[in-house]
Image (tube, rainbow, N blue to C red; front, top):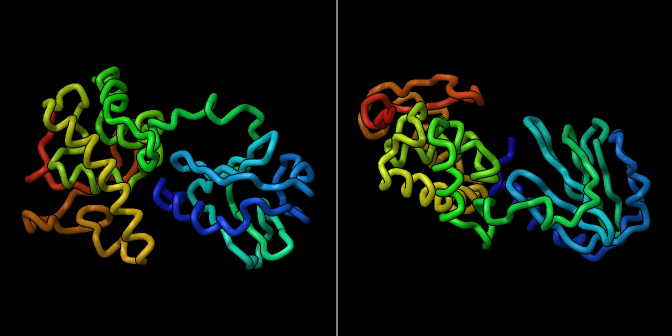
Length: 243
């Protein structure tokens, strides 16, 4: 599943279509796609893992889910979920969720929760974390209401960096570790973004999908933890369990 930094990169890649008229629309989405025909795109935005195509009176929300993808100025052999054609170019989305939003985006989204946003707020993230003391940190880092855009890669890498076991309770973390959790998540998101643009993200992984701890030189554990039941890669020696 593409994480927040990847969606920001997508937003940058499609700027050529901003202000352009959609001349054709195709795809097997069940939403009223004909509504997009002959409409001008006024902006592209992102919130966490949501890619937002903004028109004058509504917004199309794309969520690439687990296996979604997109193509710019080309098509895959399979049918698109939604395809937008312009006078000079096209944008196609596959295996994704498509929703039309009627509301003002400021009424729907808390921009301060987006780990890539200029409006990101450490203080608000901390307040939300403290309101759920029994939540496991592995779940908290995947909670889009707290860390919009954070996914499994961010989770595993951040927890390894700050030496915290993924099954630790949020409320059991010392204040210093809680601050590290928030600060490192925001910091890592932008490193993720930079590495992804250079096609070298995986080269920098220290824990995610790895087998040996680079600090302790012992096998890393792989377990499906928390309510989210997502893969966690961690070291039982250097990542402390706070309960």
